[in-house]
Image (cartoon, rainbow, N blue to C red; front, top):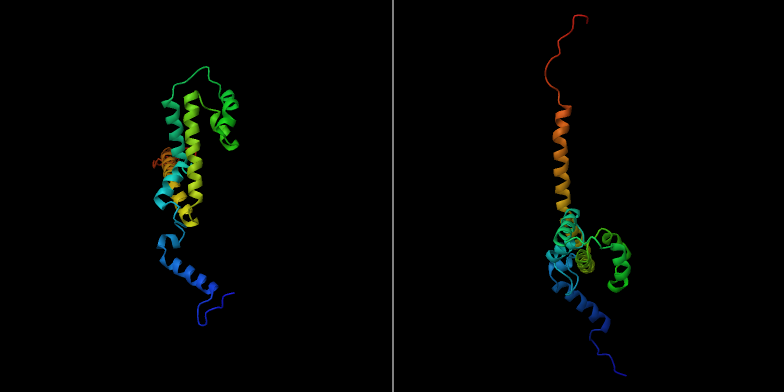
Length: 177
């Protein structure tokens, strides 16, 4: 049994000191939660992953149109039969099954499968980020949706403004009044 060194530092005290030194050495962005360890992504990568993970409705619609028009339509294609044949093979989760119902060809279904796989990988990378970085990345990814909503509201206000605007002409009184 080894004797403790008199005047030396205890093991628990040394561990606490080393932990504090390591926290003092870490960059500022790790300290506030943008990245918690070496394996996590940066905020820029998190924003890109948030777009890929379905953070923007507008970009999801554009991706679905791209898939639909890049792949030729097969009139004999049955998406339900394709799902029955390939669900276990590609390990498609229940939450993604409804996305495959609208596919019109085998190529479109495979393109959607690639997008779903990329989405799941992006979601995993986002989960490894800190809480502040997740919130920031998701907020930035939602900006196109907010902008699109404001454009739609502004476009709807133009005809409504004309409907509720007064003509400014005075109506002359009739003889009987």
